[in-house]
Amino acid sequence: MKESVYKNYDDLPLFLNAETVAKVLGIAPSSAYELMHEPGFPVLKIGSRMVVPKEQFIRWVEEHTGGGK
Image (tube, rainbow, N blue to C red; front, side, top):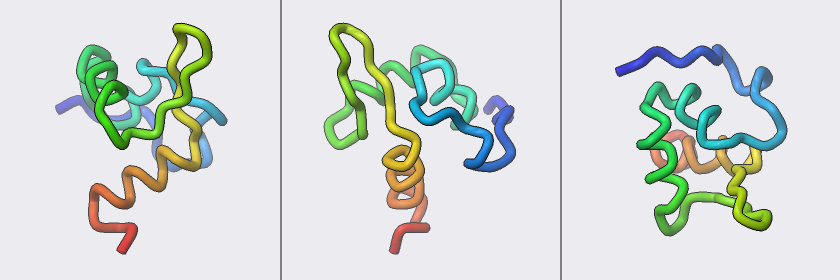
């Protein structure tokens, strides 16, 4: 597993692209693209571009790691 380059949520941009999602989660960019196509993942589609709002991404991570309970 790759190590995340981000040390806290404050360092994240307002909207994350697949490359940023991959860096945060320590996964390959191709895995981030797959994740962004999963139902329930908080993606905002703008034309053909897909971005993830920072706050919704944080909430998704917390819910999927037991931190949102």
